[in-house]
Length: 84
Image: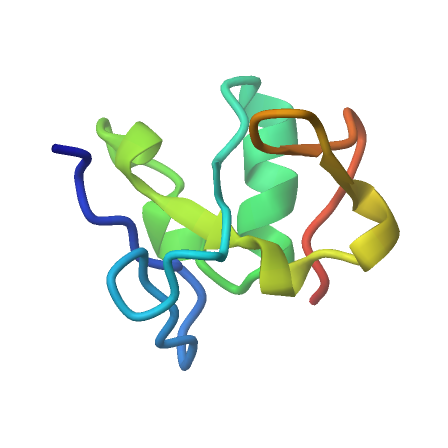
């Protein structure tokens, strides 16, 4: 059984339960890139969270050109940024 995923953006109610067709992307592991994402999504409160890997941003907050369809799953282009 997979864990439930929720979008970290305030006001977004997308979850893997309500929208199983939506992909949820983890915050970047690179601290500089992660900080950039957090600033763009107005979630500076997550900056020092030790368990940042549990937070995700759903594909609805990226340009459609940045979300690629591979044979088995959706992928995010390397330098994609969430929409602010």
